[in-house]
Amino acid sequence: MYNRIKRYLEQNVTQSRLEHSMATSRMCGYLCNLFGIDEAPGKIAGIAHDIARELHDNEKIALAEKDIYTTTPYEREHPVLLHGRAGAVLLSEQFSLSDEPVLQAVRWHTTGHTGMGVIGKILFVADYIEPGRTHIDDAYRQKILKMSLDAMVLEILSKEITHLRNSGNAIVEDSILLYDDLLNSGLKG
Image (tube, rainbow, N blue to C red; front, top):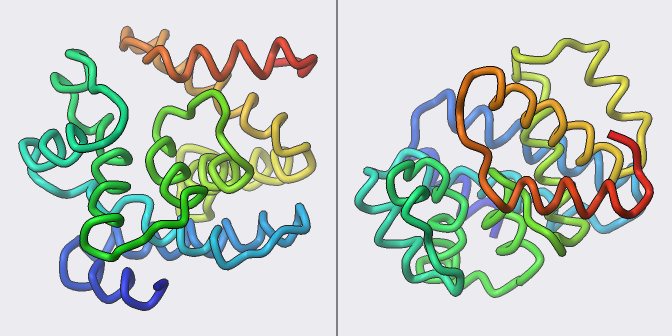
């Protein structure tokens, strides 16, 4: 499956998106090994997570509306938020991918979601900290890598929520609910 998705990306996304997807996949594999779980689903989620990122907005919306979750008016006004959900549908339809933890990971990698599984959390973190990301430095990356998985997700959500607030952007409900859920579990943000 990994190679099929990679071949699709080679033909349908920019080189920089392909490189980011491959780096995210490698980071997913690293995190899976760090937390003692099978790396194969993580690597597939990593390579596939942005499969719909460069589709036209109308295509993202049309695919996302086939998803089992309802799209919101805000998401339809900001289709980039739907690329994970569109990607999950695309993977299901065009690749016959039925691995629900992988589909959930791709679906929610942008915003997070309460009840995300381990693969979803790993992808959420890997997408943010893969070495090609220039919004963080190596010291921050190393700090993250010393945390528990839930603490990693909480730290990244905290940083993202602060960034969105400071830039005057809205914060989607899924992110807030996941943040609150992790805080209520006893983690510190």
